[in-house]
Image (cartoon, rainbow, N blue to C red; front, side):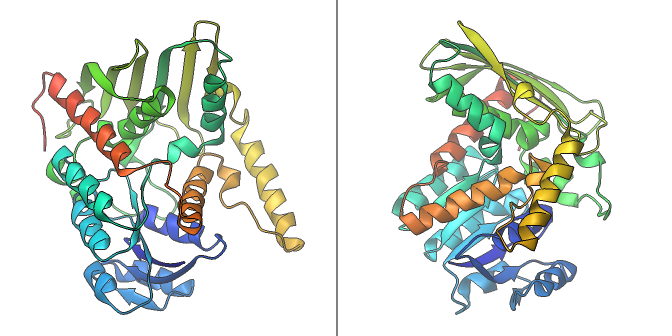
Length: 346
């Protein structure tokens, strides 16, 4: 498979590096408006570089699959053009920033012969996969309540290589929302993942601790449309932790027991990193395939989701996360905004 990278920001670079470790996959082209980002792509052997992704899509380079990691407001148009050009498409969440655009993408995917997948990476966290298996096997009885929490420091933290937060990130008409779109998207999708079927919003309230033009904290309550299963979601950007410290948990409450992600993730994330880093070093020495990002535990899910996508292309099977999933998740986010008493956007 010959891959073209569209967008080389933080997530684009992460996907690019993961692609380098997937068998039968070769990144042959990349597009980004940043010359600095393109230089990094050139350093890992990508020869066909573009400052405009339209040129990548229209060029004669032998690309059959694209990975889109552009700013949120550019997702719809880049997906539309990629599908119309006949490419397999993997896109970072959200699929688009409005429900109407998501519905249009669903129709485009239905007409396309290629594979399409949205990056709902948290479904691929090892602990989450185990929880899903436990629930499906009935080991906690009938599922009654799903509790999901994700608390980070949002746009106010940076890595060793500091880069300013892009201007579009603070524009509600371009980002599609605040913490509910950023973190809430993932945990709402996890509720759908555990429960299945359709859901609706019962309650939503938002916080504005940092006086931004959008919410920086939220509590949302959902219910399955097909059963009485409730979901309680708590998200925020106020947590002053530095990764790999990660305040995330999922709890499945059944009528015969419960299971929590706290019991399924590494108890000491630093010791886990040392162990996995050592294992990868030994794999390199004996020339075996390493496990990218396994040392970080949570970030390994980004590699696993791409591996799944490429496997689906290779085996001509449907990805486990579809355009419908992207649409259903955004419908719930839009509903949460509408059920709140605040002014809505975009």
